[in-house]
Length: 372
Image (cartoon, helix red, strand yellow):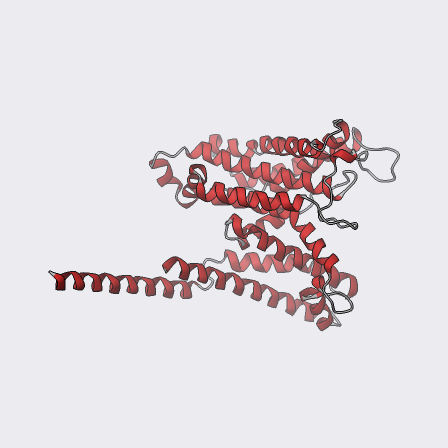
């Protein structure tokens, strides 16, 4: 009963944070738009309602497709945050994973359906190895993983751009991009008819289940969570804190690399990212929304993808800039990160649970005394 009440509190707290964030966005929309009601309609129902008022199937598939990379980065952030590691390197790993996956799709020649799998696995492994840098610096030198991983993102970006511009660019094109991927390396569409929804969506859901089982049904996942709760106690209990911190950050790099490579090989024909794609930053918001629980990551990713699509529609058909999504995400982050937000309500639940436990204990003692 106690767990159910606290779980219900977290749901109420999350819903309140989202509603307040949307309220903040509504205020800004009324301030900057000449047609705020139309803009709100595009934001709130536009992604799933067609111009004729029916269900927009194409828009629904677009939202699901947009979820693919952010589900992976959300899972990556959940694992790292659960170990109390504020690692921001998922953004760079997404770009690196996409680039490595693209090169494997171009220069590795395979005539089997496993070509895409090989590309994705190689990209994930390299991203996991890169994430060893902030992990080892944290464990061996005590360096802040937030600072080192944030700097690592831009190192990765400029290394990728260097090789893209001077080594792997297709000079026959008007813009800087690689040569096209082999057809065997492309991740096929899940829904026919030109949809960008690929089998990567199914892979993402499979990894949601795997990461949830890993975090809540294995010894390693338990160790990661215990270190996140109290690192000193975990170390005193004999847990291998250093190795577990490294493990959590490597897993985060692997998952982010998976997201980047699956996104590139599924959505594009060539690699043409010239800046960090932003999926790692979205993954942080998703992990916060999901309360570091991998099972809730798909719901949080759907919510963020829905808002992104709504903001794009506002920017296209109204006079509201697409950057409105950044304001909404910042407001969500603010309310979720505020420890005192609805803390009074939570305190009442804790006190009520304690009183119920004391009453139950008293009734049990009285019953046993009567029997004696």
